[in-house]
Length: 439
Image (cartoon, rainbow, N blue to C red; front, side):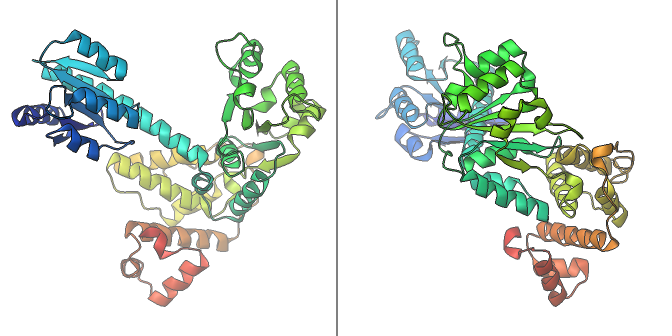
């Protein structure tokens, strides 16, 4: 079943407003009604989380006038207009102005509901894209997404903030699933190029001819090439190790000392294997140009207590999504998570967290069979951790999850964990946990 759509209904006739609201409510949608266009306009903002259904013939500001004002406020807001006059020229004019669609009285309620559903899906996609663009332009949001209290993640965030202020090209490497693309976006958003284009191209996704056209042209191509679109901003080349040799030469011409585009910053993203990586895949002059500054995403197995913290956060999110209690880790579960090699890193941890929620909901053990058989390889071998590290990581995870579950209520945490206030305060300070973050 599709998600319910929020719908603003505008009609000066009370019976018609109520009828439309009832039809749409029965179809599972959320409605609010307005007796005139002026009242509706005051309540509908640029990021209104829904759609508008309005009669055309109304005293004062009519439906066409409301449409004009809403389109000027937010051109992507779906507005469905209703008329009882069969006025085809008016319908054509409304569509030209920007109406999503047009219904003529008497109309089929099922058609209206289906139209509202499709308009709502389009609206959700628009708002999701806007939010993504805002996040890509907001360095603080992206830095917060690089979550983790480990020393490795703290250093990574500091390095991003430092390198973002420089203007040289950057190489980001690391194992699969470590968040390299997010690092690239944060690097762009935290620096002086934040308001300029950030263009991603996946070098491994296309054959050489197609990649050549996407990156460099030709000039007569319908699609503007990536190097042109990213001028003054950042060109992010994902899987840069897959860039063909001929295209490496063209890229070097653009960004060399006397290159054609000195105002272009290139960020190369490389999935570094056990041996080789970008150094072996790229011609030396291009490699040393791109790798003038370098960031390495730390593998999950080196992030200590972050493993338990991230697992708990992801499990809580999936539990809310599936409408069930979040699974509670035992000491054995926590040790399994800490000892696992995590060859797929954070991406793999997300999958394990979701499966753990589903398995726990079905009455199975939280991590039964999910971690023990995890494949390993040469890149995923780490020396054993001291017992103290496991104990502290489990303790921090337990306090953190209890604080989040009780929304920062210290007294509730004290009661559940049977710990005095002074001890709890000392442990929260030790692990960098602040009550204000859970309110």
